[in-house]
Image 1: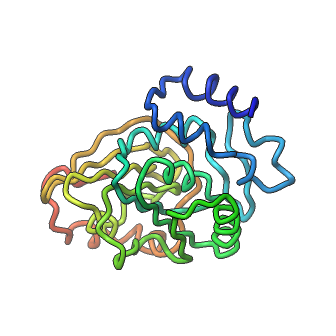
Image 2 (image 1 turned 45 degrees about the horizontal axis):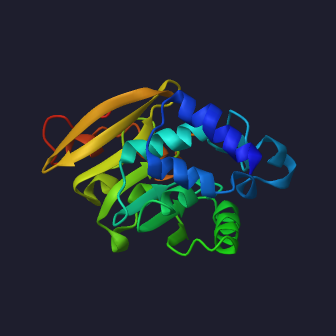
Length: 228
């Protein structure tokens, strides 16, 4: 598709995305199929696209950047917090072995599942629920990606469900957000700040817990665990 080719060349490759697997995944996933019909004409533009329920589909560069940062291999299992339109799930599924995605807004989850099934993405499982608790019965995961921003830190249940040497990519913050990558090494988390971003807030339990510092300090991870 000409629009998709232009998007990848101008918005993704020209901004430094070089991973062959990421570029190939974005080449084969039809972005316009994941956008509501009223906004489909904006599917390939350089910006987020509304998908309803005050949620958005991230701009192509951010999808590519976050996917590349995970450094996925073909045999890995990924947990996604925030299915949204299902586009990020589809991109991940073209690289990883399995994708498990959680969406708190039922109509979005149902719509994404319908689109993904129609496009024959058979290695994606979606459930409706609060991403704070992750998906313990499917854990552990090689990588975790958050497409909504917790206000202060990545929820510890997600960290617990990450394999040793696993990676988490997530936006953190309320008003001024930073995209971070966390690497789990034994009982330590190594953190790197990648860039400034703007994501919709993570909702549900995480909002009720954001002022409860006790949930942070009880966790057993040693130095390097602060995500603020």
